[in-house]
Length: 383
Image (cartoon, rainbow, N blue to C red; front, side, top):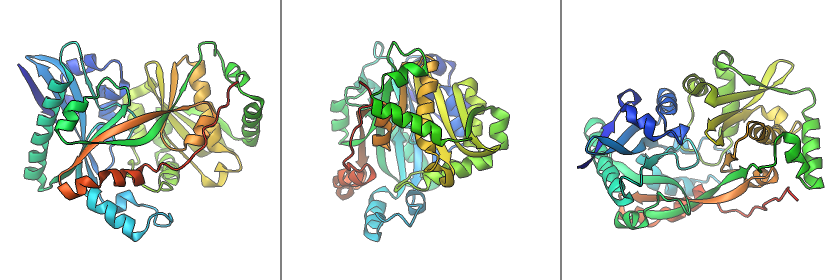
């Protein structure tokens, strides 16, 4: 018999959850515990297991997200955030939503099922039963109505997509910004191999960027260093996060510490120092054969003159190449500069449905704002 079970805490997850998700660190209890321990204030995590008799055959991360204007529009100085835009967006997104997936990270890291043991339709049917139970639970315990259901993120050819099921539930299919991914070539054994493959224009750009670092050095931070610098790391993260036109969450100050605490050597924090002062950082998740770039931050004073962001992208590539990863996942945003270091855009979609019939009809227009399709020029750095 097929059935589902909802879990409120990672401590309650069955041991078989870990066994089923060995392919993806971001679905394993260690990462989920770190996220749960230091999630944004407006995000609450739930977990659904799908069973055939007593065997776990599928899982899903569910996030209850409370969206309000202060969370979505934190920088009132951004010119595109006008009153009428805020008002229209708030009508659709304001309030409580349920996300099947991880809102804090790009990619399909929210669900998995064993296709040899359960078909997609049966799996999703159980997940959506679980969503209905969660809606009732949230209404009863918090007197909050779930306004929107969102299932994220899928590549276009993702085997976990079940178009027939999503259509039967009247979910809209919406395109989102692409995931920028660089495949590591088989003959790249060191960073110099990567640089040598570049066209002269891009080799020169690499050299200029490195030269502009001047006396700034980059080194890995261990757990105690991350803990001791949590406030500064968070401030540097906010410098970047608050500059975004649209945001759905703010990471808490202890987030990176808890990620490092739970993931240990699978979570890397690299700091940039000028005369022993931390002026920037980036984080990485070592996800089997894939290197997942995570959050970063920097001091605005040094970003442009020292090309900190570009140097971070190069250093992420170097780490991935030297540690034999198959790909470096740069995630979405800043597509042009990421393509200049070798990342390629991989289109992604998500599925969503609003409880209000009228508002449901304008969801695609809302997502065009959240994921602007502005023209950008893809760069081709390799010969």
